[in-house]
Image 1: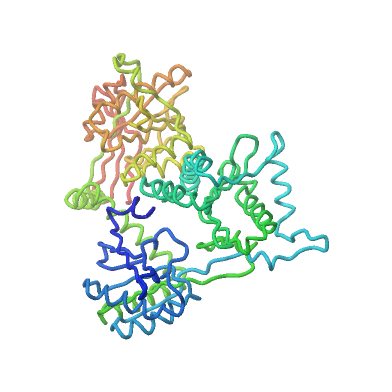
Image 2: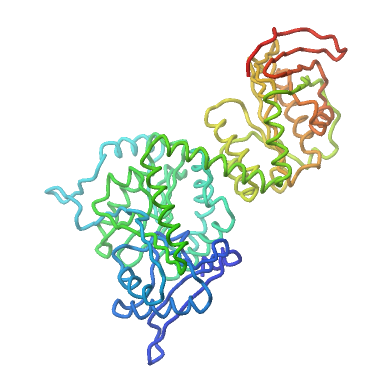
Length: 550
């Protein structure tokens, strides 16, 4: 139900229910139709650590045969079964039933999931657990509790869960940004799924969100489940600013200690993912398979060949790095096409190629001397861009790939401490514009491939971005004016640069109160490059000698 409510519009459910002669439910196959691949898959394949068919083991083969017959009648000739446990009765049943229905089956290892068998944990003579890095955990907890005591809690009721879910979701998004990635929780559908799942499972007492707190500040979370004797470490996260104290690992150790005292629990399941910290505590594993079934022999062979090539490339480090680089470039190209169209993308590529041999680029440099007041300034707020703002912005623009790409770049810059970020918001908290500033000393201008400086306490505004859905509403000049005013109040001389051909940008800069001071022209003629500086009166001053080479 949670998957349907969150993803039903893009992944239509395909459910099969089997009944015995007395009309009692005896089998469930929770599948979905995948429009992109024209195939059937597990309904929870993108959200579940383990996916399977449900029936009595003795009925599994005949049940699966009936399911495959129904899929065949619906014209579905490809089935993708992700995260199917290797120890499931379904493996042998699929082998038999797929042959009867003339499906070609191919299975590979998907994940090796780590688990903590609580009964197998080593104990000392006094009964206390022998757990890894106990000394490190004690030092971390002492450091986190130096000012306020460290405590742990588990939210199990829907009221308690709903009070901590928003905080957990935002922390997860920020943690991924901190590591240069985009969390799946950034998408609204995923947040709906987790909220609906918590609501549905809380009625049975199966949901548990664990937290470690230092005073009133939460430092680590785990969105998990307690079900049939297992406690699932499903979706954890922690405060990246406290990473040196390993708050996530500390929480995991505390959960193991708590689970070991509960006679109803036999296992702490760490699920998918080969993170090193899981291997420190795990004492057993459970393997899952990725099974593909095709009516077409050609498609079946293609799956096998593709898998073999992928494994070979992965084993060869150099080839793997090249393949990943190529994949990233292709993904970037696909994003560009999706956002701007194939015509604009081809034009951009042609321009890049031409610029390598024959180009002229003019960059204008402006200084701020005050701007006219904005009659709507009370409707907007200029805020410093921090992790909290970045997290909110990514969730707000998760479906805008260009803005997400910008925010990932901003996250990298924020982590390195290079520059100061700003965001312009309206009264509803919508992010309208982003920009950065830094000291105008040895500042690299990418359009000119050269560093520039300005004397005195000068600061340059750079890397400005208006989300496409907010463009054309005056937010660029409004944000520039607010940033320049703030910098001037701090005793700085605000500067900004812009490419002459970007007319909307130049107009926005001038409307914000900036005045042209000079321009720099970069010419490339068959690899021979020159750089000249020109004042507004067009008096040219050679600032570098001609430089040969690309």
